[in-house]
Length: 176
Length: 464
Image: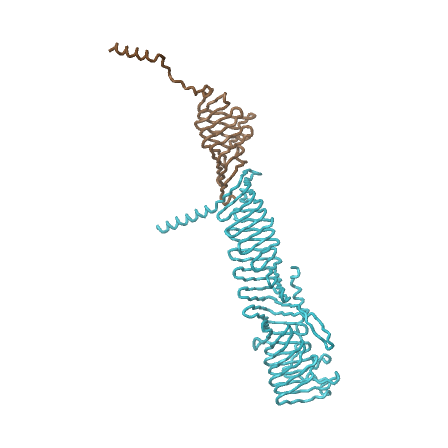
């Protein structure tokens, strides 16, 4: 019996003539591997020693070659005014930071919340250079007295001054 | 219990529905939200459409002030509510009051009237408009102008104040205040009321007027006066024609005009009439236009007889009827207790007198030609010889006829048991008062044209 098995093995190896190798995924590139990765991260943005925003993310992956940082597992960004008072909180499922511009893109189920206004959209960008929140998607602004919907949005990070396009604006009688 | 519960649910549903209707929706090309001086502002620009229930407003730009609950509307503003349309270049919408306002010229149309003014407010819940400054209301039948007007759509009613003027196909009405019920076609005017009839050149003044167009009836029941400016032509013995201003004044306490079924004018209570040499005082004057007839009469036993003056003659009777032809008096009938007195123009204490049951007087070219007396005629008439007094004649008969020349008695004819007595001048001179018939009375307070003018001048209608 032992001889038979040995014979079969010899026959099989003699027929192929090549060595067997494990499969290799050639599409995978080194740059997909984050240079740094962290969990339950907290990133503080400051200007002239004053806190302007604090980012909370469940998972952060940094890609220096692509100059971007990917955020997922729920993200939250708290904005602070010049007196370091929290004014607005932005949350989303995912996000991305452009490491060259420090612009933050909140993606999927985006909610921006100030003391009186709630803004929801699918995608929103916090633009670092002018500290504005912008979106080119369908945006809904809700306050206790009004509901504004439109396509395209631009606001200061306090959500006090904003522009929204192609709007439908619903308000109660006592607000107009 | 279940019934109460169902009612509560039904009531709640109604309230919820009502609240749903309170929602305001604004559509536009863009919205800018900002805070200015602590106030939240929403600027909606481009193709703005604002709707709240059945109210829809379109404009080029709307600026909403949230804390004040109002919005400024800019550019081609059009507000609509069912059949109502309001247009302006720039205005406001006040959410709490559900009203619009504009100071930039405003036009309201609702298929019934067109209303324009420099300033206007409209309350959508109450269907009420308040328009001011150069207000014009165009109706199918008339145009109203004033400085202020309240238009109540539900009631089809317009209340106009300050310099009110209504122009229709026949009349122009001026007043301080006009309350017009469009559907019922009722107009009530108060304060310095003047009705100007363009077709017959007449003016009616008063302090309170009610016009019922459907029943074609008008009443002026406070200080009414009618003035009709006219001219009359007369030809003298040499054939020269003279045209003179012949203005008619009628003053009374109540003036009524019926336009159907027959055109009738009624002046009641303290009626005073003046026209050239003619004047009258009575308690009731009826003018029947189609019949060209004026009737004045005593309205009860307690009231005075109507009095009529023509030149230096006075006429009284229970009822006096004047027949007119081509604006000139043709015939005059006195019925019941007729009495005629004529004062001599040179001898003022000498009165020709005639009494009868009735008198018929006939005129030509406004001059009396003949007077016919019926029933128990008594007369006293003075005689003159070349303008010098020459006694008097007392006469009685069943009937009599007096002929006139140039409004002076030229001949007296007595019929039916005539009787006469001559009194020579020496018995008459100085005793004129004793030659008076039992019913003799000469009424001094003849209507005065000057007093009529004074009343007109109190009305500031000329300012219109």
